[in-house]
Image (cartoon, rainbow over all chains, first blue to last red):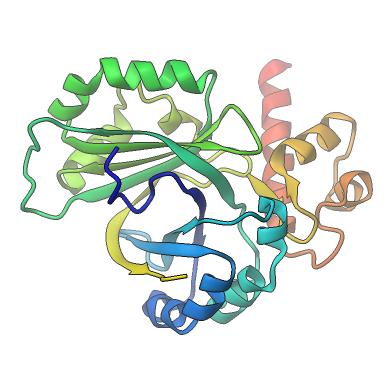
Length: 209
Length: 60
């Protein structure tokens, strides 16, 4: 894991939701920089869905001594959802990164990739991590450039997996015919878990504390 | 997943409430507190109820 990785050694809060006007998300986030700094946020990454207009995935890296429950109860999140026009508050993933895998050699590093994200419950996170490690050659052949595995704080079976793939076609194939070492694809979209997110990295904000 | 931000209730706690017999969002709120304050998480609670119903259908 590289120390420059914005997700590294950090609590990550992530949520996938639909906004009426995705163009407003980034300027509204920037205008809330000091409020985000107040809860210990150090990075905010925004991804926008490629085919599902209005759907966004926002991940916030946080360094905080406060319990996660207290962070989530802060007005910052409610004010944020109000500002972007989200009436039904979505379920929120809270966890930490446990592993980061990268294709070697990178398949097509010059072109921007497509992000596939899923939140799901899996049988055993440690075993899953080892299966991903063992399957990296297949992942690379399928166009997967990077895989980040996050484990939830509140549920030892719950993961959020972010992957970067070469392009939209490969992302679609990956979702429709996932690798045996990628059971989270089938687990997404049930109960509180949103369907698999397919989108592009929009922007990242660094926040100095 | 944290479902109810007002009260810090997770999807597991809601699933437990459903397993104990809660079958509406009001019953979930009464059982564990999720959705009892601002009520803006009730769509997610309905998704959890729906998933539980389909799980039961698969088992029957």
